[in-house]
Image 1 (cartoon, rainbow, N blue to C red):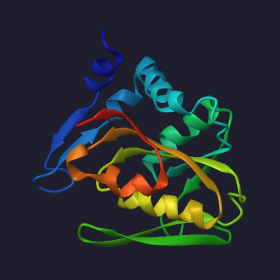
Image 2 (tube, rainbow, N blue to C red):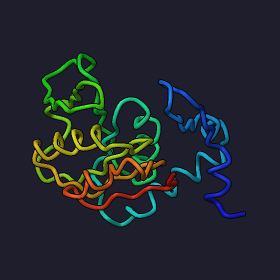
Image 3 (cartoon, helix red, strand yellow):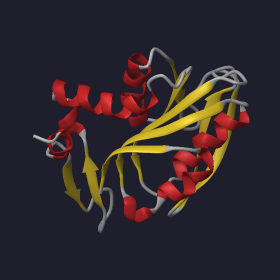
Length: 175
């Protein structure tokens, strides 16, 4: 069986979540299947093997799930990019616009050093707002973005175009 078909079968569609009209792509069934989880991590990591990734930066909170596994697979460190008020030390912040309002992400200022090569990861790419803010944070710390990898892309929301200035975007499953 095609490996992407096997992964796709483990993505559950949840209609009207988190609000009416939205079809939420729930990957938690994939997480409980050890072979599927390992496959997803490998498919997210493979394009970046041999590209000297120093750190993987994951967006809160589901980016942490794949980010730490990718860091291990790539022999890299992991850096969390968090929602406001979660990091205890000196931090840099980046605000971004949502469909209905705004939000912010933060990173410790000493988490990344200038010139380090960073792979950004999240579970899902929709409009690209969160990932764009993560990229701007990493660039603000003078690091180099190696690429962006996500498990699921919702292509109709065109987040990929928003991330074009930051380099290669790799997705495993596209809806």
